[in-house]
Image 1 (cartoon, rainbow, N blue to C red):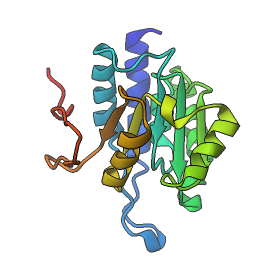
Image 2 (cartoon, helix red, strand yellow):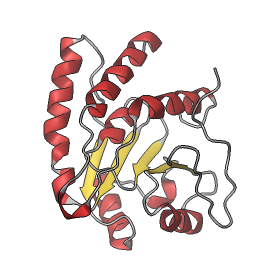
Image 3 (tube, rainbow, N blue to C red):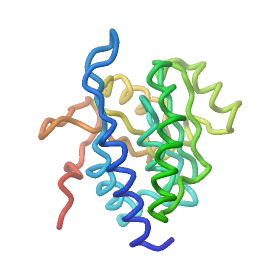
Length: 196
């Protein structure tokens, strides 16, 4: 894949989804959204460092909302899996992806890969991972890269520490300079802002 073309595609995806941020939705209150421009730079650095290998890495977003991070990650991983408990938020995935595809076509950019699978389930229930395994053959202990937007990060960390493979990577998108601290986990330096 052409690096310049990929970077232009990532920028277009970021612009599209960052324009879809929502301040307040239903009884859940404020809807938090990953800034895909920032996240894309972190992913680029992880690819450069060899933490992500396009033909091998399996990615799981533990609270994928409208699937925006899964769409972005589809360009960088073998399998991009998302879990969302709120059916209303997850229902936005299809329409937004269609609009994005039209925008990418208009700009003659790369289309999302056909490696995205989203599930309307609870990230903390064992039956969820049984469903994912039976549906697409992805076992929890085979996932390489986990992600969450800070919500429930400590509960996810405990599950990952107990059940994931030893070299699994866990990314937490936080607020400003606040970094979550999790018992028995070592934290690396924040990947944003990336080194120039």
